[in-house]
Image 1: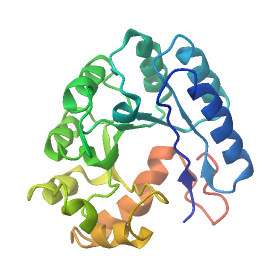
Image 2: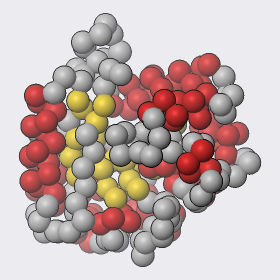
Image 3: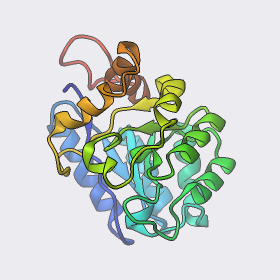
Image 4: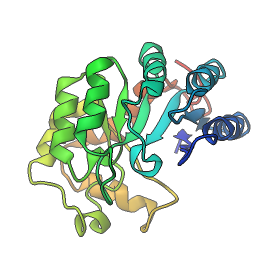
Length: 233
C-alpha cells in the first residue's frame, strides 16, 4: 500500500467545510494519505471547494444516497464546474445499492455529465446494481472511471450479483477501472477484494492497471521509488 485517500462525505448542510479541514489535516500529518475533500449543495459550497483545491485536495467524494441530494441542484453547478476545470477526480456513489435513493441511478448523474462532460467522475462500486448502465456512461464520457469497491466479492455477489457481461465491459474500459475497497468499513478481509478482481481472470496487465497504474495516473501521483508516491507527478 503506497497511497490512499481518506474519503468523507456529509449527510446534511453545514458539515462539509469542517470535514474538509479534518481530512486535509489528516493528509498533512499521515504519510501516503492523499488530500481529500467533499461538498454538499449549499450556498457556501463553491467557496469551500475552491479553498480545498487551493489547499491541495486531489480527490473529492460525493454520496448521493447518504446525502439524499439532487446532483443537478443549481447550488452544485459552480462546484461541478470547478472540479471539471481542475480535472480533479470525484468519487460519486450514484448507484442504487444497497438501497435506492431519490437521486440514485444513471439519470441524475448523467444529467450532470451532459452539462460537464469533462468532469473526472469515478463511479463508486461500479454503479451497482446498475453496473452496465454506468459502464455505458463511461463509454460516452472519456473521463468517467469505475471503482471496484465490493465488485465480485462473495458478500455482494449474494446480494447484487454482477451481470455476466460485466467482466468483458471492465476489460474493455481498461485504464478507467480503479481499485476501490471501502477499507476498513467492510464485512470481509481487505484481501477478499483483491482475490475477487484476480478471479475475473482479465490478465496481469489489466490487474496491474486496476491495482496500481490507473490510480497513479488518475491522482497525479509520482510512481517512482517508495516514499515519493504522495508527491504530484
